[in-house]
Structures are given as C-alpha cells and as structure tokens.
Amino acid sequence: MPLFAPTLLAWRFSRARHGQRFTRFINRFALAGIVVGTAALIVVGSVMNGFESELKQRILGVVPQLTVSSIDREPLSHWQKLRSELPAIPGQQALVPQVSTAGVIQAQGRLRPVLLQGIFPTDPESRQALSAVREHLVVGRFEPTAGDYEIVLGQALAQELDVWPGDRVRLIAAGGGVFTPLGLVPAQRQFTVIGIVAMQSEADSQLLLLHGADVARLLRMATSQVTELRYYFDDPFKALSAQQQLGRWFAENQPGLTSLSWREAYGELFDAVALEKRMVSLMLGLIIAVAAFNIVSALMMMIQDKRADIAILQTMGMRRRGIQCVFLMQGIHNGVMGSLVGLMLGLAGSWWMNDILTILGIDMSLVGGTGLPVVIEVEQIVWILTAACLLSIVATIYPAWRASRILPAQALRYE
Image (cartoon, rainbow, N blue to C red; front, side, top):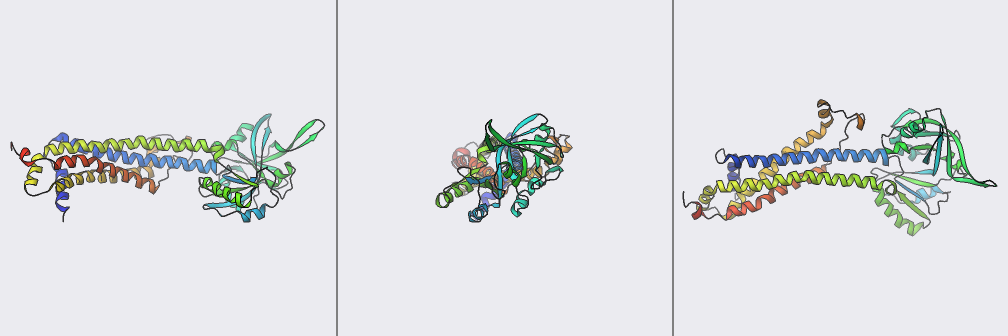
C-alpha cells in the first residue's frame, strides 16, 4: 500500500527513544498543549452553554418571547379567530391570550413600576406554557382565580415590597384611567398575594402574574377581550426569525397587527453573553494554536536530527512525496491523539464538574442548589476537534516540505 511505509516510518520516528531529548520534549509539549486546549474549550464551552440555557429558561421563559397585538394597542375582541388564523411557526409550543399593561405596585409604603401580565390558567395552551414557571413556585399557590383579584409575585419583587402570601397590595394601571373634574384618575385596585415564584434571575424583580379577566376589568375592557397573543417556543431564540415571518404575514393578511419580541428588552444582555462566549473560545483556542505551531518547532528539530535517515530513505528509492507523507503522518498523529485525549478529559470534566468542585471544597451555592449548569453540544465539540486536527495538519506542511528538499549528497557528506 502507498501509505503503509510512510505511516510505519512516522510511527517509528514518534516512538524512537534515541536522538535529542529536547526534540522529544518539544514534541510531547506540543501534544500536551493540544490536549489541554481541547479539554479546556470543551469544559468552558459546556459551562457557557449551560449559563446561556439557564438565562433563556429563567428570563425568557417568564417574559414575553413574542407577542402579537394591534398597532394602535386596541383590545383584540376576536382573538380566538385570530389565533386559529395565525401561521404555524417552527418550534412553536403554545400561542396563548394575555392582557398586559404597564403599571405600579404599592405595598408597605413602597412603589415599584411593573408590567402586569394577565394570564388565563384554564386555557389548555396556557397551562402547558406556564408549567416552567409553576415548577419554581416556592410558597403558596400559582393559579389566580378570576374575580378574586389574586396575584403571584417574583421572589425579589416580594422581598423588596416586604409582602407574603395573604398580604394585600395595590395595583395602579397605566391604562383604564377616567377623566374627572379633578383630572385623570388612574385605574387601581387591591389584590391579594397568593404565591411567590423564584426563577433566580433578573426576572424575579419584575415577575407579576394575575388573572387576565381581572386585568381586563382594571383596564375597563370586556372580560372576553385581550390585549395580545403571546407565543412560547421550545427555543426562545426562534422568536427572532418568527417575528420576521409574522411581519410578512401581517403585510399580506392583517396590516393592522404588529409583533414585539424579547430582543427589545433583553437583546443587549444576550448579545453580551454571546460575545463573552466568542471571546473565551478565541482565547482558549489560542492555546491550541500555540500548541499546533509548537509542532513546527518539534518537527524541524526532528528533521535536523533525522537528516541522515531521510537521505538514506531517498537513496533507497523513496520519493519526495513519501518523505512529505512521513512528517504529515507525524502531525496527524499529534493532532488526532491530542484531540481524542482532550475530548475524553473535556467530557469527563464537564460531566463531573460539580463533583470535582465539591471535592476541591469550592462553594457553588451562589449559582443555585444544583451547582454549575453544563450543556454539552455535539456540534460544538465536533467543531473543536476539527479545528484542532486541521491546525495540527497545517502546522506540518512546511516541515514536511523542508524534509523533502534535503539533498542526500549534502546530508551524507560527513557520514
């Protein structure tokens, strides 16, 4: 076979015990660099993926991901018909009615601006969509009853207002006000706190849920009307492409409607997370790049050490392409072996990250009771392994070319 001899020689050169010790040290150092860089990229990338996933669940699972409303913010009277007419969107989990408005909550002499989210717990799709929030209920009950004027608060908001289930708070809505001889009187009413939800994110300071019919009464709307339809997706990032799809559908079928995504309120936060992921990956990728270019130094020193052997191989009939293949195989060996060992260490470190931190005595209570979130993405790992192998192969091209240019007469002159 054409590659049998170069592969065998590359294996023998990599396993040789004689020669310069420094050359062997540089070669092993380059291999170790690829192992460390690959493992570090996998571990850090998995942890960053976990943090991003937690942010999506704990923030975008609570705030509206994508809403459909009228351009002039008029109530939607025939929202059931509109819900059946809206196009199906890939990744859509639920499309639920909602009555929302800006307002102010008052309790214990404290005022706090909030967004009132009126939900309909009895709606089948709403029950499914709100299951993620219901799982984080820490005290009380979750589902408000229409007509009882009940409210569910986020934990941070409840602590700021110093309220507990059973306490009463006053809500002042921006809409629904009436003009009197004394001026505009805003719509307001007292509500009873029935539950507290802890999402352990920024959303806790803004989370405020109550029954949609109660919000409609507060806004002096008919209880059958809603202000918007709210989408839920299996991946909240799909709301951005869905917004473009809905925009085209509105232009053709419902020009009086518009959509609003989570990006208007939280786009900068997730842009910062994405930028941090890219910068961390770039910095850790430099470890692999440095290790790959250490292969150049190791191979150049090995070529200098094996000049006589290369010359003898040429006199025995091995062509220049065969000499190049010997050292290309050497680089492939370093890249593949380093990547595979780094893969095993990276996966092990990701799977047992929290156990390792516990053994080291590192307190992770600040990130929640479950420790560091870790999400291993197969596509990301494939890209890391491919990049490590390609860098190793590219680093061997110049040394392999230099080895093939050795002239046997010059190399064996003083032998």
